[in-house]
Image 1 (spheres, helix red, strand yellow):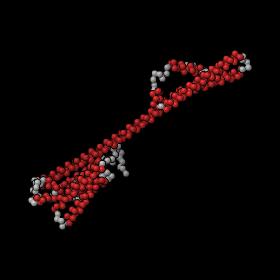
Image 2 (cartoon, one colour):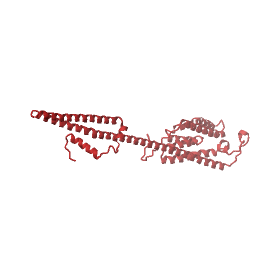
Image 3 (cartoon, one colour):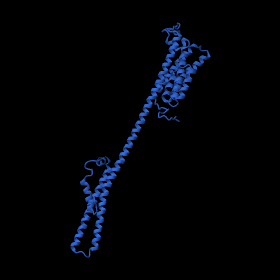
Image 4 (tube, helix red, strand yellow):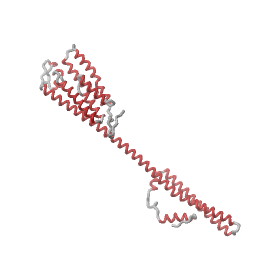
Amino acid sequence: MSETTNSPTPIEVPVRTRGWQSMVMVVCAGFMCLAQTAFAAQRFGQDSAVYVWMVFCMLVAFAIGFLLLARSRYPRATFVAACVVVLVFPYDPILALMALTALLARRNDMKTTVRAIVAGGFVTLAAQVRDALRPPEASIWHMVFAKPDTGSQYGTDLIMLADDRTIVITAIVAALLELAIATLAGLHIRSRALASLATAKADAADAQVAQLKTTIDSQQLADAIAAEAHDTLAHSLSLLALNASALQAESKKLAAEAGSLDAGQLAGQASRIADKTEEIRKQAAGALDEAHSVIDMLRHPEQAKAQLAPSDETSLTRESLDALLGDARAAGMRLNT
């Protein structure tokens, strides 16, 4: 289960490592541990119990590098195990330093960072000083300061170009430099992963904002189309209802007065009814055209958006208002403006 905190920055940092990088780390860690053990074993005879222990350490060194493969899932446990292994076995501290880098990269916690650096520094110093204090033939640091072409493999004594104090101090300085490099590498990987995580969150937020904007635009377009349908269809249908009511009134009046009207009056009434009928037909056709226009808006929202945008042609003018009132009055509505 992931650790949580009130801080917006996560404690567990997602860090991805390529497979070839892991294999390089495994090989380097195993090689350095094997080399350190090989030098340390030279001061013991083959018939001694310590030499058997060294052989066992060399066998373990072939596989110890694979411990780093668990650093992604268990960075803290991997670091602790690497420190214990380096202290118990005569290994190079590179194993602990790699585990330190992995822990610092994957845990964004101040306590963990400080404790890991202190523990890693102690293990690194102990391993390097341990090698520097060994006899010259069994120490890598002594071999660094040895005169070339000297030593048992050349049939001569090993001639040192520096005293033991200088070698120990150099080993300490090298251990501190290794610790600094491992620490800086871990912090750099962590900061880069946090930056990538922040970028991903920002991209997700931008995508959500874009989606919300699209939804709002769609809702605004739907509202505009609904308003257009209400303004056009409702007006035309209202005029149809008024004209139909007027036609109904004319028909009832004609039916009531049919017996008392002469032929001329009947013809006049019939003509007015025919006019009302023709007007209703035209208004029905206009309403049908307006309905088709609204349906086209629904089918082509981008064109509808441009069509419904405010312009000089669609703005309300005195002439358009007079025409609207004239249509209502012609349908029989009494209006005072």
